[in-house]
Length: 120
Image 1 (cartoon, rainbow, N blue to C red):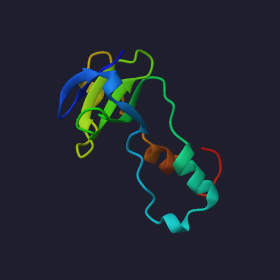
Image 2: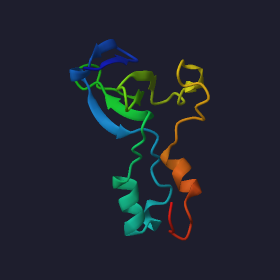
Image 3: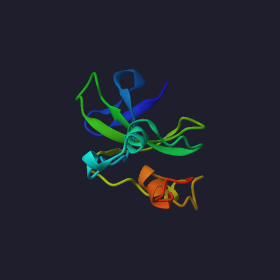
């Protein structure tokens, strides 16, 4: 069982929250210009890393506010909790994560993707 620390209500049991998917997925700037394939990528494709992963959670039985959590997908350890309006924390200072270049985000993948729609 996870113990999540709501930024507004404090530590609460995992049963008070609902998972909202990967954090830091920006809405497309020109949604009307997207192809069906681009919409499918935006809606359905998400990262699935082994290690630290930024997620969205909502305190559904408490304050009903959304916030972000960085959780290790291997150990389920919660590494950081921060409000949606706050930047993603630098995790390189945490023990065991020294030298981590940062958490990959969906925008990082898009920048490295072939603009012609080739392999990622």
